[in-house]
Length: 96
Image (cartoon, rainbow, N blue to C red):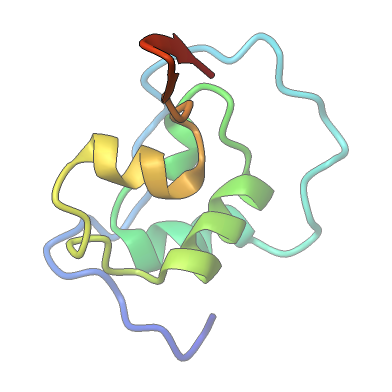
């Protein structure tokens, strides 16, 4: 992760969370400052998204890379992640 470049145009410090997180469990975060490194690489706080922990954000960054501009839209990225159900049409009926 140290070899990945810093995101351009981003602030130096992680901004305060924009939303309260009631469901986040304590003790599951790594001992290193993973959140700070992810912020340095991505330029945004990915853990501010509800349901995204530092480990999940790390996995996404390591699988996709720091540049997600190859995806034409957010729905294309969600489809690549497998979050969108696939529609199958058989006999005129749509199934999942």
